[in-house]
Length: 314
Image 1 (cartoon, rainbow, N blue to C red):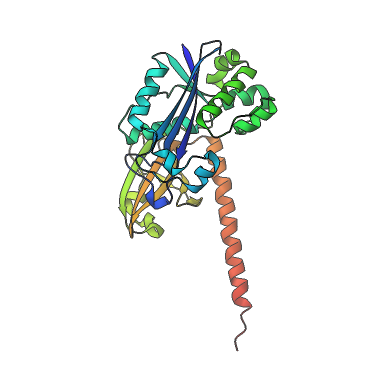
Image 2: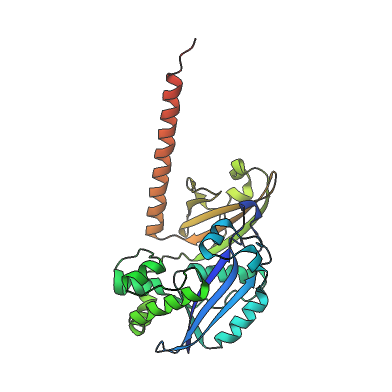
């Protein structure tokens, strides 16, 4: 079996309204693939770098261009994604397992595969190296950046970061500093902060985002296990049109719901609603965020009342 240590770079839409929403919300379009292939003892075999020409986000997001150095002109020089994926798949072989730094790369790969109607299960059995690093080096659950890990392990980062192949090589060097045999053996028992997706709905033609919960399609979310309508708690707003809550089924307990939205045109929005498993930690985090939101709203209301009290009539 091979280990494929992979890193991706992706462009983002210039505005929220430009986000592709079907068949899944596409928050990033892959523009660069970098990977290192090793044997089971993590001996280097070969590496690959593939530049991808995007279909949807053809103009570089200013923030992404700043950190990657990739320009809109350079985007036109890559391969189309289906061709790039075919090349990556052949290079990986039949018996392999991905290793990435974090969860984002595999999630982004899955979304891009879904948009092109390709195999979304490809590479789903992967290892998040952050978890092994945390257990063996940090001892906590914080999500460290790759550069932080490299610095702590005294790995020189002489090549430019945020290049897919360079970051894959840095990740490989982190592997060489860890006890990967032990880490992989223990991996299944490590705490996984990624929630399991149980249901995903795309809701189109929502006329008014401010009053979206008056729309029964948005308000009435079904239990993913029995189809009964869930009793939703108060919604927490996190900016960018994103909302979350904990909802309850009388038979199957708590679920965590997230909503994100994209503007199609004036008075026409599309919503993506995802239902996850909700463990005790998820519920606690939601309750903390809800309390902070309620305190902010209460403070804002008090300040507004004080401003009105201080108005002096002529």
